[in-house]
Image 1 (cartoon, one colour):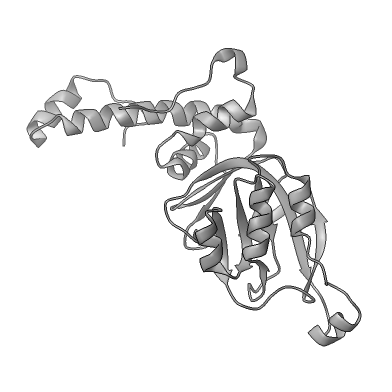
Image 2 (tube, helix red, strand yellow):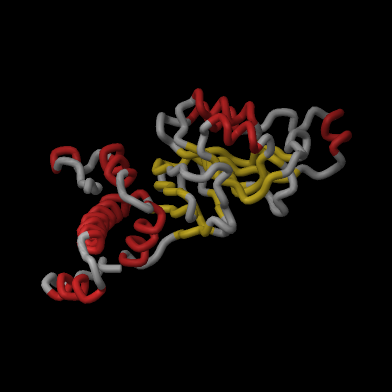
Length: 245
C-alpha cells in the first residue's frame, strides 16, 4: 500500500512540496488535528460548523483572506446610494496564487450569501484550491456541480449585494471563532477544517507522514490477520508508537 512521504530534503523548505506530501495523507484533517494536538493545539473546526457542499473533496493550501461587515440601513437605501454594489470576492481572487484557499469572514448571523455560482467560477479561473466560507453561500447545487471544493456554515438564497461591504482583504480573519492569518495552511475534508500556522507546517507534515506510514503498516497487519488472537500475536512482535490508533 502506498502512503505519504516527505519531499526530498533538498526541497524540504518548499511549501508546495510540503503541501503535496500533506495532501497524500489519508483522512488528512484527522491526521492534522492529531499533529496539532502533539504540537500544543491549533484550530480544528468540525463539519457540523463548516460542512462541505460536496462530499469526497479535500484541500490543503495557503489562506487568502476576506472580511465583510454588514451595512446599516435598508437594502433600497443602500441600492440608491450605490453602497455595497460590488462585493470583494473578485478582488480577493485577483490577489490569490494557484492553489490558495479563500477564507471568508462574514457577519453573524449567516443569513446572507457571499458566494454563488459566478463567484465559484471566478475562483476556479483564478486557480484557487477551494473556499472556506464562515457564512452563507447560495447556488449550492451549481457550486457543487462545478467541482470547486467549498465549505460553508449556511446556505441561503438572499444575496449580500447592498447588504455587506468589504472591510479588509489580506488581513487576519476569524473562522468559527478561530484566528486565521494570511498564509496559514487550510486543510479540509469531509470531517472538518484545520488551520495550520504557517510556521509549523514542516513539523505538522513530518508528524502526519510518519503517522500515515504507521497507519498503513497497521492496516496491513489487520488485513493479513485471520483472527483477533492472530492479530494480537503479530502486534506483540512490534513496538508500540505514539501514533498507534
